Length: 261
Image (cartoon, rainbow, N blue to C red; front, side, top):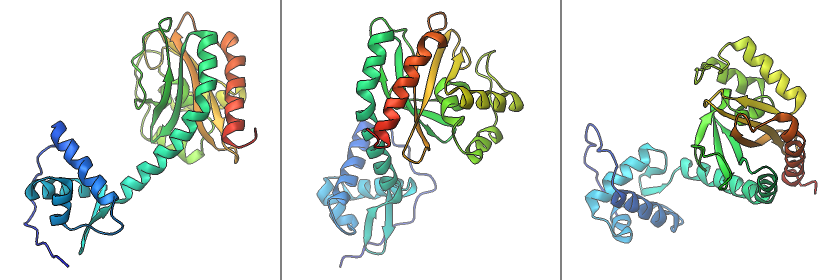
């Protein structure tokens, strides 16, 4: 078995900025993923096609990020990779179930339709459908938004645990526009209203002039797993018009997610 003695780590590793370095990092991860056990630095560099000093520098950076683990026998995939893989699989399945429903909502409203999940104190957009008649928004798949002042976030938080809401409140409710709710009692009252009505509304709370209506999606255990929304110009988004269709769409997606077809 080959033993590699590594030199002491430098005080601060250089920032990874080039596409070439990103490509090499991906090659290193792919090389280790193809192996059942640990891979030595020499084998890793050779099989990934990178110089040994470069392989060492990138491997150290990936260890620091939790993407790799360093053992006495070499390197292996770290817990962060498994976590991301599980999330990617779950989000992929959710997207597949939601896309036909989201397409129907877009055809009916021509608004921008979002599907999002809660990640920490943010909403993470996992799917988006828009078209030429939709208002141009800055949202994108993989993008994040503040959970406390978006329709998607409020739909998710209103049905989340007390601990989750408490974490958001403890982190502060920063103001994004003049309409953002920053008062904690008022925020909790708003979440209670959303939970009772089954729909969340936002009107210029995160972005001036933009409004949306959102509804929660649940799994078989009635745990909220996502939210779907219709967004557009404030003058075009009305809960009275969009609410019934959004409730129905979220209900259908809930049945699919929970396996109650």
